[in-house]
Length: 198
Image (cartoon, rainbow, N blue to C red; front, top):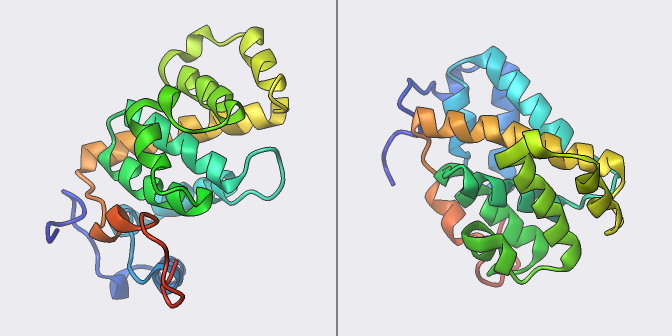
């Protein structure tokens, strides 16, 4: 795709503040490309910083009962419910890589209840989808159901926070017309070459 990553002006990497530029170049060094979300949100540097800081606190967190794959799975399932093309495609790619399952992201995005995932992840997504679609109905029984699968109440917080944060992200991506990078569509679908960047 050659379309702009956003309906709003997108600054050149050389023109963004130094701290933002450093992070963008770091990501580019790891992946071989710059995810469009970094460029689109750089239109407003203060909001970029706040967005990335909260993203990192949720998605790069060490410890707890959620793996990186679990976290990405929550994003894919709830972003599909919110019809967010950018997040389903981009985080679907990351999910395939973390889980080492080429089919899982498509399955979770289309119908997570029928996806080839263990009961533990299904319970996690049941909770996440209730946060996403019917958070006003959450009660003690929902937390108890998570505990039955080994999740703590702190893990429930993480599931809820990831769902809520990406609910915001989904709406921004849809409102701003963010397009997924072409590279995301193929990532994690085929065995990696030894020299391929992640």
